[in-house]
Length: 266
Length: 210
Image 1 (cartoon, rainbow over the protein chains, first blue to last red):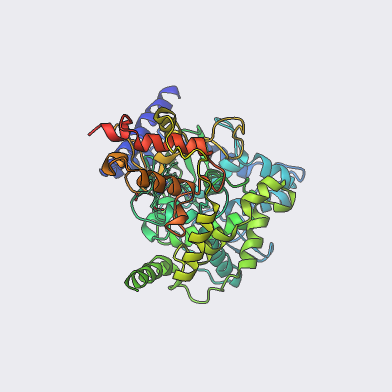
Image 2 (tube, rainbow over the protein chains, first blue to last red; image 1 turned 90 degrees about the vertical axis):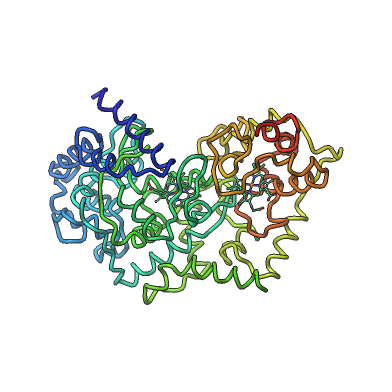
């Protein structure tokens, strides 16, 4: 395990360098992604699969009847169609808000507790991170397709875009400050232009991702919280409509991109 | 006029990329957007200091509304607000210690949730600017500041302009990408003097190396 982690750190370093020099790291990256022994993200996939089938919570139920949008129990391909509108909840949900819904309604878990423990500490374990890894991996190789048919789906997209350009806090930052131009960097970190399909797809198809610097798997909700933290904003409420609107906007912009998850990043 | 035309073309190509292709998108009112944002941070439960990070001041509101491309009258208003907010050093001395300025330019600490409020807040200029040619870890959201003082003959007017830029960049470029370090109380007047020395002291690596 130790050597595996060390070699990942080296490989991830290699990827960062290669990007900075605009070489083509795709081969090496693909190899890492496809190799369950090189990407610790797969440990989360495996643990998530166990959690999915286990009877748990006050209602002693599994998640096998959870409807992720393609019908109860259908996991394959579900992540490639999220976020979407769910009539039972009467709201647009991303994977994480939908998992909360199922954990509360099927298993009887407490919503506030799920939200509080969704992000693990460094090197720690969170059920949510494992479940997200499991469900998302079942869409690996598939393309994002977000039809935006329901009016609330359209509204979520439009809200996400409106918020993307909203400036506030000490630094007057908006998402667009860092993510609306091509080929820019902050220090040495490359910033995707999320208003372009290509960059949005490169970003969204690689999450959830194993973050070497965090020593754990991170989800898109975490990435949103993280960017807002850098923007000197208060903590984003996990699973809020705000978070879902941003994720809807990003994912729709990434439509057509082929998922390769769990990813692995710096 | 020419500038305006170019700006509006840019605005079109920047914002229309996807929205134009998706039929039936609703128009989002400012009230609706602000409600979503407040709910997303549980505004009602926050102390005033954190609410202030969510509330937009007039400049932020206008720059959001025009997506950083305000029409000329609005731009002039934003630039005036910025100029009126600037406080100059009382003793007329703009230059501090370039070594402290270098540290502040590298430092990205401060004002994030969980950051220690007693520690020095950085300017994090390297996030967006090249400065000393020996520091390779620099961002590209802003122009290169390599040899900044030397290229301007260490001119006193240029030093004053740079002070204004750091204190409130909107004084000359309405809706600049750059933070308002002085107006928003990120950096003190002394901090800014140190950073100016880093840019303008002939001994500073910004001006010395090739």
